[in-house]
Length: 144
Image (cartoon, rainbow, N blue to C red; front, side):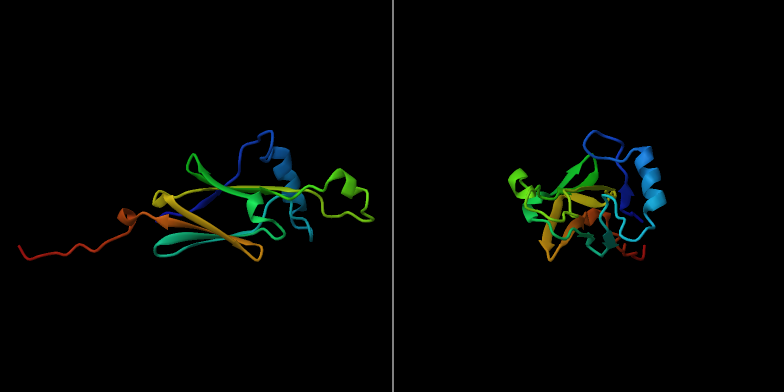
């Protein structure tokens, strides 16, 4: 049976967690309101496809990037930056610019050419079709 696995990226300049980041996240992830830069996902396997649902509230569709690279499904986004002149008008500013990045290892039976995404009410839904040849099929036994 094939499963989709969550992959943590290796440390990079733009995104990716260093060992210190992972330690920091593991210590503080249990605190209420602490989410870090990860977004919650649900992944389920259906008969003909895998379905990934990701909570990305407050984003615009054109700010969400979904791609496949090196057998990884990558979902990333960045919230819109406030222009410098508009930043002076804030009395309280708790919602800063954030970047999100997650990657998932695709199973062997995933069809890379048949991946679709929709975004509605703050939830990104990505469907990854399964290859037809990967599905189990019944072999008829005839009398010989």
